[in-house]
Image 1 (cartoon, rainbow, N blue to C red):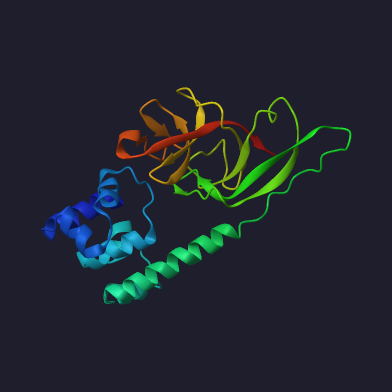
Image 2: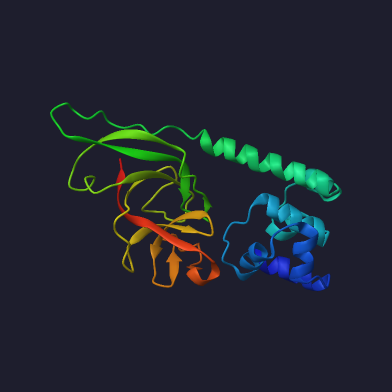
Length: 236
């Protein structure tokens, strides 16, 4: 039984509706509905902690994992008032973002003077190869790469995170994107869905991961979907 099913089971046994869970946990109802529909493959820790506090259960009750060294912290979190939970959640999110931003810089082979080069913006915040992270269009650095038949059409580069596009794409890979072309079904693209960035294969009415452990994400589960371009390659 996965996390979503366990949440539904406990919620049903407690006779708690989605609206009640949203109101008491502070999780937007739309976000909660997406989680419970299975369109969110990896819920945030802060989201699960908030749900646990309302359902009066431990995180291990949802994940099925035994975490003896961490369980006391979850127990303490569940006993905090709304202000305390909000403060802890804010710290978790800020520290998570700090760790993501301190990812190793991309190492590029210097371009020989005899070869033509192009300058591309590399976005610091990774597009997700997992469940989606916020993409900040104002945070980037310029990188210099050799111009080839593959790279000449690239408009920008993105560092990906997660494992949902494995085995072909690894965590930390830098991909090249042509923003002037939208992917055809079966091609890879970059999508901004309700403010979150995704690197996925376009399936017509859904986004598809290459890793079979991840579910397809129906585009109908989002209110706003924008394609940022087709992925045309990867930097080595």
